[in-house]
Length: 289
Image 1 (tube, rainbow, N blue to C red):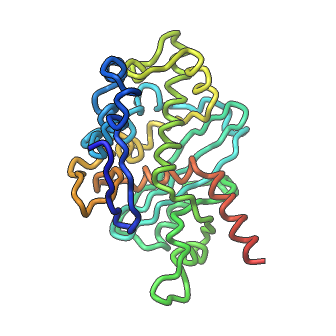
Image 2: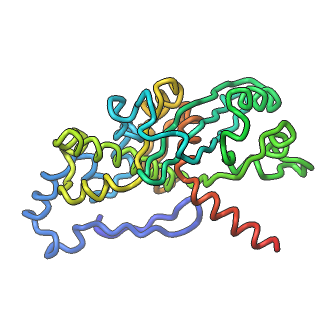
Image 3: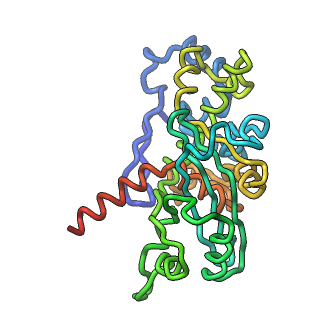
């Protein structure tokens, strides 16, 4: 249908405008040329407005262990700013990731992880602090929900972390923006690999990327992981788009992620969105003045 209205779960009306509404602008030869240049799922998602087109595909399909896993940092860690990012879990694992941000090379390197389910906040704090040297990190990001008071409680989960020696800052938890930020960093690493090996990485083979585009991508923030971060690597590798997503009336018009382990993957999002978390915190504090 060229034009379709659908009411979202939020109550807003969504307008779907299909390209076939304007046959003069979209003649058959133009459609055929674009379809031939991009993967079938991408055509269905972008042009046929199919929100389940990526069902079952990897969220981070740009992750290549041969490129993104490095036994040593691509820069001197002593010259980088270091931080932590925590995704808190109760029965699910709590994940804490240490990462270094090297501004001259615009690179982030994740070099250590803590990953444990079924433990108290006191145990998590004790174990996390035991893994690092004093003042190793500048600050710690955490899922912003831990800073909210629930059920009229006098304290928050973040307060409990602070009581046991881990003071935290609420992270930016915009899921869609976070996935885009992580994907962009993974792609930047692939672009750098392409120049180092004088050939485009295979990830680019079914995408329309000109050489100047690769040059621009290589300049953006890239990301790498230490091989000891097995849980983080496993989650980034396994995270997939929900294969049960469909166009049912009660479904929201968006892509869904499968309900699998994503605690370390969430912490990666928090880490790479670090600048936005600081900006949000400053705005919040200004409102309190």
